[in-house]
Length: 368
Image: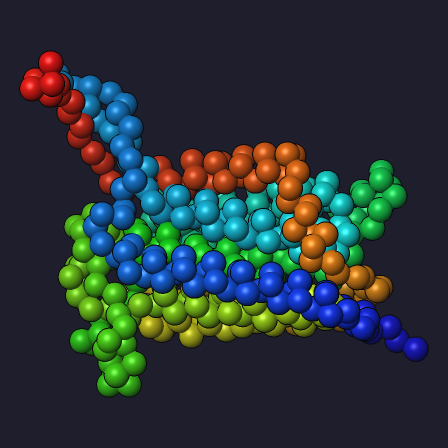
């Protein structure tokens, strides 16, 4: 008889287990509701683009040339941190050893983070830009094989097994959370922006007449690339954030119920389907042609992920204990690992190549 693919039959849950899962999900929803609502209100303004300026060199006039550090980098690093933290919790709850989780995380990030820049340069022909769509496409392609290779190494060295589908599911959920939160970075920088409401159809105008974005600041991408600062635009970043976070919550519910293959496939398919649809509502340049390269990547990702069930081995029974997963975060090694990753992401994405600054310093004479 053929084994069931991707998940074990769920065991009866105790009332305490159900309550712990409910508390966990409620806490996540409340956190993201507060974070996203704050971001949607404040981040389109000019105030929330440049976080800090670091003086580098001084010219003959005594004016310093500055390096701008952006809120884009801060919120990108925060999104990576949230996604990876959730990955640690979910894999910890399924009994995956910390060392295996770290190896998988580092290998996937080492491929995806550079890919976000390389693919964007290839598609958009611009040297100073990033693409989450390109990074996610690479991550989806390599994740199953990274897990299988890590499982072999872990089995040989530590005599432990890394379950394939629970790990894939955790990666899929963490990706949805990371990109959902990461859209706050796009709002702060004014990139990945929606089309002007005045040029949209009547249906979209009715939907977004009260809930739209108006970006301010001439250094935001929406201003220098499309002259849409001060204009009502479709809040496509906000819609993407909400959809991705809600889809991730569905994935977590399925994961906690030990339906691992659906908890892998549903977030992945839903996010990639929305990527295809959302591209038609955006005004930023995504390459030539009616169908963008990112939409093609999303369609290929759906087909690829759907076909994995026919070629990947099935997963045996795996129990999930969310308290065990949350407790796994309270470890100095885990905390330091997260800090290093978040700082590295901030330094990689937060240094602005598109904006410049001139800095002068002076003394408050009245305080002498």
